[in-house]
Length: 307
Image (tube, rainbow, N blue to C red; front, side):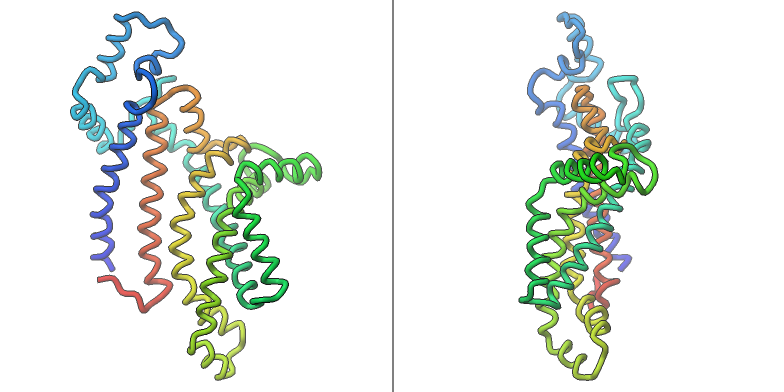
């Protein structure tokens, strides 16, 4: 296991290098002259433009610029924001706990609702319960995050007055954004768990377990569900990317501080170093979490061994 983890960590190196290249090229791929973006609304004379270009190192060869950028990344330096000249890493670390809290809460919501609906639909295959569960799953997949967020605010905040609409702090301010963000993932997991459970429930060892007189909940949870979790765990790693992407919309609508909202503010303020830093951190988090998901396979299924 340790050897496999070490190999996967080595495999992360070229991936992280690729991510750093893409984030570096953001400055050169965006429409317009980067100097104009950095100058903002201030008057820009040719002398001032040349000065900014020299300060940013844009007058150097592209490879030299990237090597300098990569060198700063290796030291944990993501640059400084254009407004306030604050270290980008400090700005990200300040709001990262909020994004982590929202993402984990949304993931927990997706797992609880998705797995429950999937098991219920599989056990009641072909009945009204199965049809209802899959109808809800289709609605969840079809509903954009911004739409479900606005519906929840209108219903639970404006009409019923149960939950605050915006802000961070406390469970009451976390429920709606976590649910709105986790609806789509729960729908995807529900359909996947149902499909996996239907395949497992037809296996011979399930028939044998029932023939031995084991209780139905033991057969379903210990034998069927555990063997159906492998594709579900794979999907959880993929859904993390969707949750991180959806956090941009959710944090903006619910006015929650986080990486997503920080990236939006950076885009609106044309703060390229800040946008580069948020994208780099989000992409790195996604890659690392998928490594953790791969390692979890062995914990779920002892038949899996990594060489």
